[in-house]
Amino acid sequence: MKDLEASPRGAADVLDVIVVGGGFGGMCATYTFREMGLNIQCFEAGSDLGGVWFWNRYPGARVDLPSIDYSFSFAPEIEQEWTWSEEFAAQPELLKYIDFVATRLDLRKHFRFNTRITGARWDEASGLWHVSTDKGDTLRTRYCVMATGPLSVQKTPDIAGYGRFKGESYLSGSWPHEPVSYAGKRVGIIGVGSTGIQCVQEVGRQAGELFVFQRTPSFTMPMRNQKLSADYVADVKRNYAGLRAAARASTVGGLRPQSSRAFYSVTPQTRRQLLEDAWKLGGLCILGTFSDLMTNQEANDYVADFLREKISDVVKDPVTAEKLKPRGYPVFARRACLDTGYYETYNLPNVHLMDCLEDPILEITEKGIRLESGEVELDMIIFATGYDGLTGALMAFDVEGRDGLRLKDKWQEGPRSFLGVAVAGFPNFFMTVGPNGPSALANIIRINENDVALIARAIRHMDENGLTAMEPRQEAEDAWMEAIRAAAGRTLLSKAKTWYVGANVQGKSQGLTMFTGGFAKYAEACEDAAKDGFHAFRFEPARALAAE
Image 1 (tube, rainbow, N blue to C red):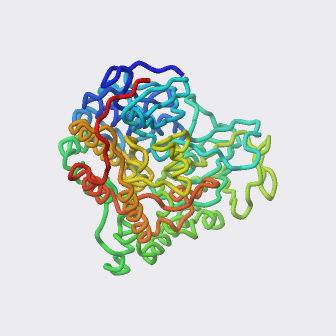
Image 2 (cartoon, rainbow, N blue to C red):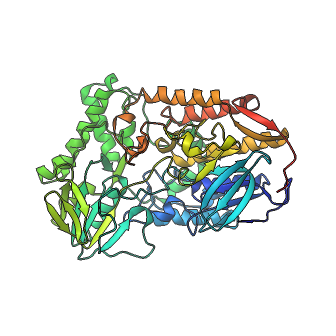
Image 3 (cartoon, rainbow, N blue to C red):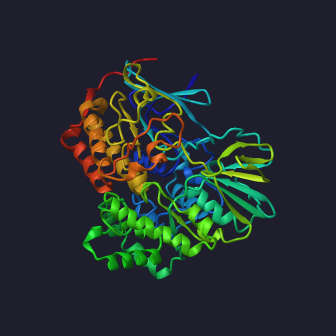
């Protein structure tokens, strides 16, 4: 291993911060720590910035939050200079935005691309992290910041025969940069989560034949995307400060409509009309119709029935419509999906729904997919089989903290941390959008900005007080995990087998480890943790750096 030179801060080859990840969190962290005057080095496995949007180039890829909300707030000049073209931006426009931000703020110079971190070890003698890369380098740094995101490690399909298919085969999370043609081809798509839904509605209009292999159908609602007018964009830019403040004060960390109206506080006729209005508006408006949607099973059942009715209204074949109707779990306990003509796609004569609950997949063959009923020969298979969510990236390499404690061992029964930001036993080791924060349940960019601000505040506190190491007190971590458990017990979210609870990865510990109390309460908890000199943490005083 060779040591990489770095500018001095207490020792000739010691960095202040290593940032891992080049998505929204990594970009925010890079800018923030650079503006603090810290000596930083950032790493990204891809060849450019963008995180999940660098990799997710599959057909129909599009954000499911309003573009103006799914954007940075830490640089007001960016807000004024960049203009979104659509309410829900497609992947190419998202990459253009990321490129604009990176170029405008000169962020790329801090990154080493095409480089993966293979290990991080806390050295007690020096009070530093030793971080290794797949290029054979080792770096020493005061702080590690893992901006690896909740959805960055795609899950290899757990299907017998995977890899045997002789035709074209694609994973949605590592899509080729070159165009893919579906014309005249027999295409199979496995998976109907958010990604699968976007793929189906795009590929179905182009393929010779499309076979959709569905095990568990998802609830999806019309996106109703639209071009943004110049007048509307001007209004947004004049009011960005107020919009951001409203987002940070909300449960979801964003501008999605929310209501304080409980389900039984309105008459049956009004309930129906409210849902019809939300359906016509599109997006995630239905999710905000009733305040107790995720705590009141009767309210949830009513909304689920409403959405199932809409499927029958659209899909002409009643047998196909019934198979597309999600049952057996609460609506929105799986990730809420938005679509543009998904159900209409099943009215096309070239699109076939394969019910894998009734007729399971046995294996992938050289020619296609074998079901219990027989083999479906294909020219192309698209695997929209998801990610090892929340913990996948942090478990993909060895992290060793105090006294040789490995993160993989500590998290064997599920992730444990304080606020999803710091872990007891792992000094100066921080995460953004960690597995024990709001994570997938709130606006990921607001969470990233909140977490980076908290980490920056912690580093300033350390420097101003001559401290070397900080980590959460065990009692603070335990109390936070108990708060997560208590909040989870009040919601219906854990009643579905999803990546939210680790159910999509064989052998993974099961359980809802995200904070379900909402973004605003999470931000309050972060603020409280930083009060009185970061009372929830324990510190070590400064010491001389040990020579190598």
